[in-house]
Amino acid sequence: MPQPTRTALVIGAGQTGASVAYGLQRAGFDTTLVSERDQRSLRADVPASGTAALFGRSIEAERELGLDSYLDKAPIITGQSVRLVDGTLPDRPEQLAFDAPFPGFVAVAVDTRLKADDRITSFLDIGGEFRVEKVDPARLDELAGDYGLVLVATGRDGLASLFPVDPGRTAYDRPQRRVFTVTLTGLGYGPEIFAHRGSSGGQHSAYSFVTDQGEAWWGPYLHKDAGPSWAFLAWGKPGSEWERRFAAPTNLAQAHQTLLDLHRDYLDWDLPEAEALRPIEDDPRSWLSGAITPLVRQGVGRTASGHAVAALGDAAVAYDPIAGQGAQTGLLQAAFLVREAAKHDGPFDGEWLAAKFEQFYADRIRAAYEVTRLYLGDPDYAEASGAIFGSAQVQPDVAGAAFGLLSDPRPVLDFERPEGWRAFVAKAAGEDLEALLARFQPSGRFQRSTYRALSHR
Image (cartoon, rainbow, N blue to C red; front, side, top):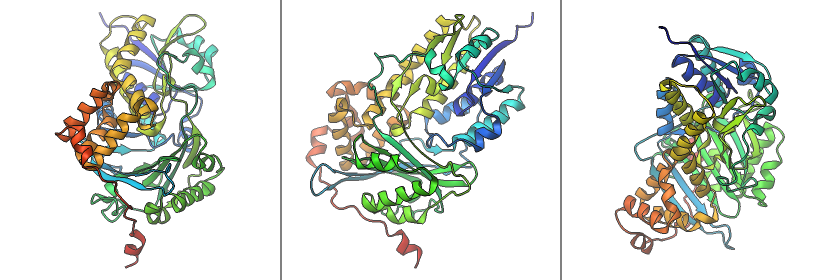
């Protein structure tokens, strides 16, 4: 006897929603994807939600779903350079400067608007149905009864209310940073770009910590229209001057000026590169400022009539983007759910959905949330982060291991015990922590970029 057609409904057509819809349709589900915006508007009328950088495991998840990872189109990031200034001391000493490749993987950052657009097209090409309509909890209740599997990949229009915050898994009740991002163009990725940071130049992203203000990141990026470009992403701590500055812009020109002023006042070692880049005038939404409370929601909700629906991506967990876990975890969850749904031969009821959420929480979400806390400088991780970054100054292999947490954050779960992060450092360096820190020397004044002088020779 032929198997009955299995049906799926996905609410929300961002990168994660479009990806899981494509994966389910490809796996044999009759899938409907619903968005309050049409395909053109999803590409043209919304800002990019951060850089959505993918590292290692999440790139593999895209391959599993049969999706394009843009590795042949986007600039590839092969490692990261770090600078740390202790802004709590009067002379603001420049203390840490190290550079290391990613351990066994690469990263790529692609405009989420481009990905969503491409994936909706691919979804339609294989027979998926795309609907444009606003879905609130009442409308979802009407729709859910017609589908076997219902996934919610957006919290808009009150849908977040279906998935209450889980207080036992959530560490914060307010944002930990003001996030600010701008996409610019005008530089390549050769060794002459950020050459003052390391020999890999523009193939490595550039990370800076100013302890009393926040963090800043430069990375290669693929913009939906301008193509290969650069993304700047920064985080202002509560009450800091950076937080005040990041809240001020109301348009692209002001955002660009904020970026330049920040480099002149705080990040002058990278100023020539910042001044050489130019905003993407044809995309007035190529910047964003806002704040996110990192939280974990209950993974399964019920509509008014009792239909079980599952939260996916940002609807399930909100991450501060400081550790790059949001887009990655959404894609990994999409691949996981498609894989599990394809082999399941029973109903997709609340019990099944809850079991799968708990399984994915244990495998990824918990660790991704904790590594975000580590990069946020949470007091629970202060000793561990100080030891790891101090050791990375001495031994680049420790830096590589720390960067590896961006792809696979699970080792951070051992950091709850001091012997856990001590063992992490020792394994990466091949010697114990005390021996490493005994050789620690502050970096002294950072080397400043001479890019502009070089470009005019």
